[in-house]
Image 1 (tube, rainbow, N blue to C red):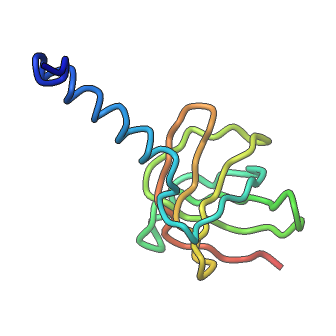
Image 2 (image 1 turned 30 degrees about the vertical axis):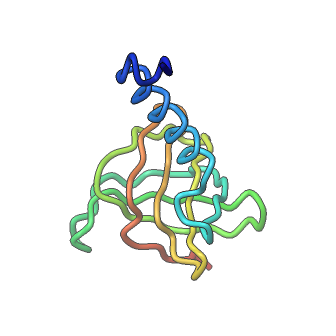
Length: 113
């Protein structure tokens, strides 16, 4: 008799392990990409837009600067890098602080000229 049949918990754990590996290897959305940017300045809460935190970031690739709004603090430190997830339509989806693992959905973005 198979060991997996003798111990069903072992079979469930093996399946869960394989499934978690497959999910981790497959991107959340195949068209998404990530871009690393430098956090230049935080402006604190900006409820005048109906949104909370407002920051200024700069693309490491192009040098373009952007104001970004999101709901909850990421506890960013000026000068650190953040990771932005952008979908296939160039909409900014999330901003991540890799130092502490916090991530927030991006609510609004405006390019600074």
